[in-house]
Amino acid sequence: MSDVKAIFDSMVSRFDADEADDMDAIFQFDIDDGKQYFVIVDDSGCALSEGEHDDPTVTLEMDAETLKAVMGGELDGMAAFMQGKIRADGDIMLATKLTQIFPNE
Image 1 (cartoon, helix red, strand yellow):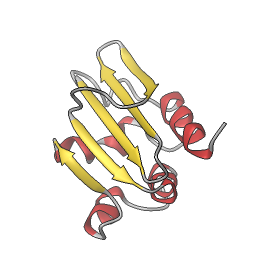
Image 2 (cartoon, one colour):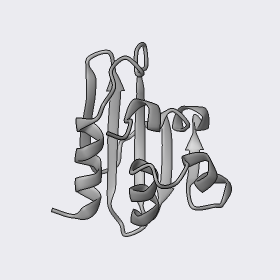
Image 3 (cartoon, rainbow, N blue to C red):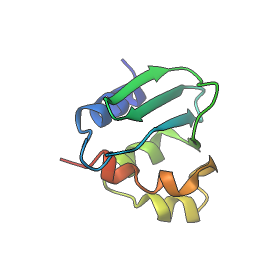
Image 4 (tube, rainbow, N blue to C red):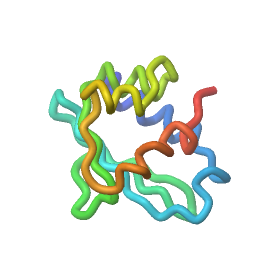
């Protein structure tokens, strides 16, 4: 199992349904090493899939190190975006909620 897959599995296990209340969103992650994953968040919870979704709400492009740092709480997502480490397309405000929906332990 790749490091990237482990990060996504960890995110799903930390999912906070209260923070995602009334959310209906698809987060597409394009990782620079060619891996693609998407997370569907809705009233029933969250589901992780590998690949590219046809109609994501927001697409986030970054390298694996940035993904690990942001989801591990070592790097603020907005700071990473401002530094150009994360490229976003779509509902960018939704991306700012990621660390609330998937909080660190």
